[in-house]
Amino acid sequence: MEIIGTVQEMKGFSSQVRRAGKTIAFVPTMGYFHEGHLDLMREGRRRGDVLVISLFVNPTQFGPKEDFKSYPRDFERDKKMAEGVGVDILFAPETSDMYPPDHQTIVRVEKVTQNLCGRSRPTHFQGVTTVVLMLFEIVMPDVAIFGEKDYQQLATIQQMVKDLHMSVEVLGMPTVREADGLAMSSRNTYLLPDERKAALSLYRSLQRAKELLQKGERKTDWILREMNGILRSESLVRIDYIQICDAHTLKDVDGIEGDVVVALAAYLGKTRLIDNLVYRKPT
Image (cartoon, rainbow, N blue to C red; front, top):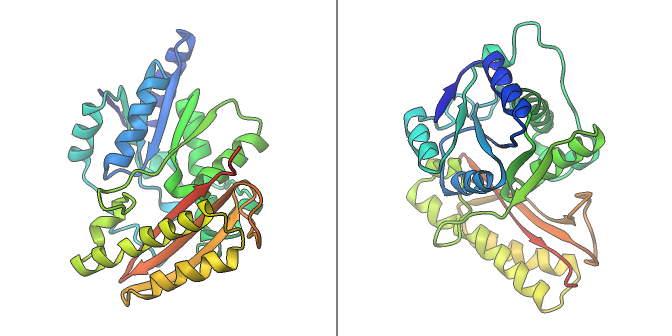
């Protein structure tokens, strides 16, 4: 595995690969890898001749009171894990290279970013779309792979690619979970033992929603009431939101007719976790 640390070098490498007629699969990350990241990389290994991952903790997607400075980082650990799944290139740029002092441009996707996390994190998604567009331009991938755990992020990037007529294919992969059901996240390392136990209520509430949907329940207010009851049974859980949205527009729905995402966010102490269930209408 080769490590590339500058934008110019990464662009030069990608140009050579494309001229040679080879395909590039790309997995953008902020590091501190877990099995969810590795699963995306394995899919990338299957999808492209060359597998590139980026490791960049992007400052513009963190709010002023969020955890940019404390976000977990361990480059040597991540490097070994990436090598273990067959990554070809680890692109790890400096912030000053990605955002030079005269950087002025942002990319904003409007409608799908307004609901869910966009309500409490109003500048988050413009930070995500700006950096992802830059990474796409630098890495020049044929396919880019993201996890469905960050479903709104995935939908936002897919909308950006569609709207800007970009040639990259954006692929979403199912959420990878711990053995007890907790969605894997780099932020899980923040959880104290009691918080980690209480966090399982997020998964239990989604499983209850899945059970109701499979039994034919189509009224969102009843499903949300059941989920609220499970989450509020844990005193350490502070709910940010629980919503059921159209899987494509991310607008709230009152009754379930097509594909939906059941999405939630909650705080356990200072740690904010998100999770979701994607329910697709049976064919």
